[in-house]
Length: 599
Image 1 (cartoon, rainbow, N blue to C red):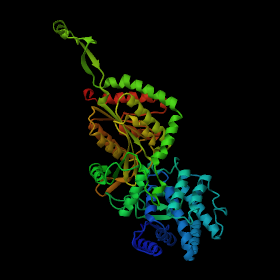
Image 2 (image 1 turned 45 degrees about the vertical axis):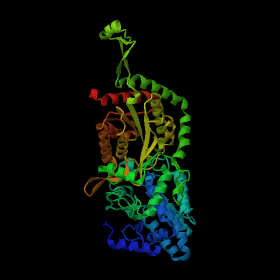
Image 3 (image 1 turned 90 degrees about the vertical axis):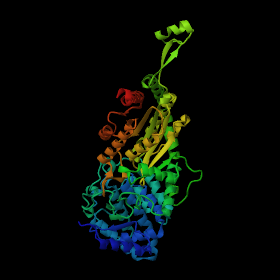
Image 4 (image 1 turned 120 degrees about the vertical axis):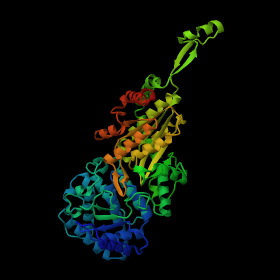
């Protein structure tokens, strides 16, 4: 099938603009049928959505799906809900909308090969939900029975019916209410679940992925779709062209980054409410970006926070739905820890003992004069003639102040099922090191809407703040290489002789911002390219005298990636009971490996 020609693109825009009543905007979405012709009904709906709802708020909500493993399902439900809401408004003044909708539904039921989509496989969820949606519309409009049966939704399970109900309930709601309704349904039915066969991150798919997903859906065969993040891609209801996809190199206006002052203001409200107040002023952030957002990370932006929220939250139609995520995670993580506190306290005591007995002795030792210890025969005369009492040499272990440890937690949504375990592991490590008087800093990172967010839970001089790590929560993607680069930059001002970076990672880096591997050519930040980019940043950290190791938190399939990135300096903890031995042995090995005296 040929690419969409310019005539159909102009026609689709005119349909959107006609319904919106203005041409003073770039349509957020253009929809085409299976023959890449402008879709009359859907483009009219897009115009109605822009006309009746706050698109700035909706776009911010939509972009929050970008690094989500349920992204495809959420995007489709987003548009179906808005179609439902816009239709209810437009049909009151434009009765012809009922006819257009009926024609669209009957054509969809006749043309779309959804038999396999009706089966219980998660990679077909979007199509099963669409089927239920159009079946309900068909019954409501008095349409004829179809090959999928007369009972709408009979192929759906309880979870999918709940999601579809959220779509149907969007009628007569305003922008904020639609967002809240969808977010509530997403939190209830989609969060902390694993997609089998559909998680593009875990399958490592980035090529003609939609041709694979829609292999048995002839209506959506699109050989020209070369890249998963292309602006033109298949959705359950048609071929969609997004005007706010990231497709270039740099901080251009592409939807991942705000396009005007109003969108910028709404985005910062959103990210402040979600992750916490910014740690730096905007001019300082831009300076950091000029230094760090280079090479593989040229098109990225940065955000640093302590995870503290303003007393009064920012308000708006979207930002109110995602507030104080760290504060919501705090009681959950802490309760999970307290449920196993006896076991965890035993691990901490064991780890403290091992650190003191094995790790610290490998720090640089200091020989001092003493009244006891090993006699220094060369000083005996000083005792006889000068009555000096310090005639012995005593070896003191290295000062713990000569070593610092930075814990870097992967805070991406792929860690959501392990959130409480990772928070517990980080606390155990921090508390054990603190009791050994070893300065510790705890940070986490994730990526969202083109930004890599670094959260600092506690710094070296805050031993009383270990429990702040229970504010750890997961969201978005993980640009591991940039996370390591950001922390390496923070560690450069650290004067300690031994600087250790310990990452807690699933070693499956994934981000929506591409890598520019050559002028005017980009590759997705996932799979081999992302692993290589991360490994490069680890090597750079090591070259700067930073010891790097990993506590591997992922699945069996990612073990080769862990070896590629961290060489032999990683450990997989299958049982927390073995954490003390495994981590202390690895720390000791890392110290020896990177000690210049042993090089």
